[in-house]
Length: 335
Image 1 (cartoon, helix red, strand yellow):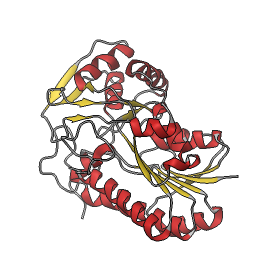
Image 2 (cartoon, helix red, strand yellow):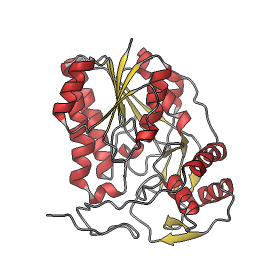
Image 3 (cartoon, helix red, strand yellow):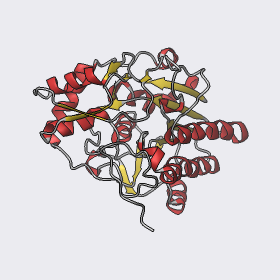
């Protein structure tokens, strides 16, 4: 039996990947520190361990005990915009924690390391985003993700560690942390509607994204070690059609049965337009489910009504307050 480690498996994408791995017949061990996930998102049938990828002693114990065949690394703090203001936290969690896993995967001869990167590695002005482009990340989150990609390439060259890198984008669906006000705009909008608050938009709302339903992403990630042509390659994965945030507001409000109420906040510094080409992934994995935005949001809205709204937690340890976007907390770092 294949034994797989899924980091971040109590989180959004990770919990779905863990479920698909179970369906593939894997023995699945989930590691998550519950900083952004929830224990009730962990699928039944996995072994769940509360812990951090920065706890090297714990990781050593897990690798020694379970002899993992595959590592699926989805543990990250994926708040791209906030990463400018939490640089140390971002690199410790998203880069150093990843290197811990890569080191142990080399030492324990893991057969395949699957890494969830991001289209944040591309930066601005490279549309459509294709894997052959030279990444030019514009925020610390994208820098960390691209650094891990490069480290995996170096690890393969030096030690033969096989890997598959996915660059998903704007993924939404069931199990998303709708209480996180710093990331995942669809979840933020749903949470605001259920709290009878206006939906908040940074700037004029004409920025565009291709919003990707989870079922267009997670199955490919889980199955990738079974596809030899995917080894040591990078793949964009997600939806093809971009929408403006203003268009998104209408769809979310309609699916939750309300008239849209919007408050515009000061524009933040972000990539205005982002969408990817997925022809490489389609050629290797086949076509995805291609769930429409309306259908995907309908599914997520049905789930959100059941779980209800969540309180929006403040990120306590903002490291830099200068230019912090409107509406985000300004709590100083504790000495």
